[in-house]
Image (cartoon, rainbow, N blue to C red):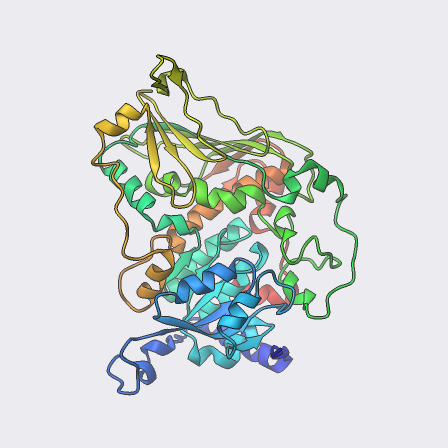
Length: 479
């Protein structure tokens, strides 16, 4: 097996110097805009191509990298991963692109191959999204980052500033945001179907280890130390966060259940469930976050189940204040009133079954209910007779470009992305506020104008999280 290039301290120092210079205002032009790859260059193939540097090659990247390259107008030229052996499903990309150069440290990849890279994909655990994304942006690289965009509120704030400063194309990986379902929601908004929403019930059934009582019982506090795989660079995996003793409960997948490294169920699925409503109804940031019930609460792993209420202020005409009620776990049922049911042939009213993940949007008029699923799912109206009345606005129209290809096309100067950091960063901050509530388990008041909690210093400290480890501190000064 091809071995990744070992990390070298001179290379790392050189990379830090470059990114600091970029952060202070020097321009690093993406290579496809230089004369070497200009559109009129006779050496360039007829179809322009985006060169990708891929940070994270296994796990979710098993779908992201093929998705970004499927249309044939982009190709990976460099892979960076802390573990080219154990990462789940990594063989798929390694077999598909056997000649791509490999690095363990993405900083070395950017340092040595930056001139050959136009755009970067970041598909790593939540706690390293920020350092990878900001490092690439500071060098003028477009970035595609898996959801949630960042691990902390302040990291999202920095990336939103960086998007404006470095003027690069950005996209977060909430793939349903570019879909026929998303376009349908826009149509519904234009037709007034989602006017006057005052309440949103959102939920997700348990599907991760920390939401299973039996599996959870096996982990008391932080996991005990286990032998570290020789192929894994554990220090790099931990990135800016504290280095805990290695355990397979962290790598290659279960990290999501720990506050230190992941975002729990709300950070994972919230980006796919509340994204349409948050963006198109302009919810912004909440003024209050109240944990109603957190089962088996502690500050190491996320709750067995969560029940949290968010309060969003009014945003203008036909956009009154909204209460968002989030439930995750085994007890997720939201009761649907009988008036939203449909009559069966026998005369009985059939109450809709909204499934294991999604949201219900309530209008203040109470004349119908909007059901929105997750990812790219389309929306429904209850009772269904209301959907028939609004069939034109409820129609579905396939898109020419999906979430992945819209990013690549935007990198080539054609069109724009649907979930740039200006959109997904704000959504991620709502997710971050929810995880802070799950960590502290107290009623929190928040000021969207100052972006600070009111009267809670501990909560405000969580907005930035623990100080990054020394070698990563410069990343937080780039924008």
